Length: 87
Image (cartoon, rainbow, N blue to C red; front, side, top):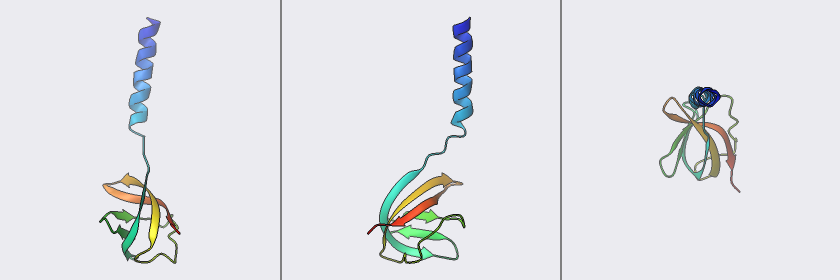
């Protein structure tokens, strides 16, 4: 009986945490375009990264700059959580 109860508790814990799991990914690339007003950055491979006011985008970043971006999927978009220039 205890084993069955433990199995149920573990299964419920997995179901509850599965819905809240958010993964982040890193991507390196070269900036193709920057749309400041729309807050969209496009890399040379076509990847579009969106950012919010909470993300600090380096002022010296421009087309042709190599960057490392960390992002999370949100609402069908890749949303930046961090971006840095690769030197």
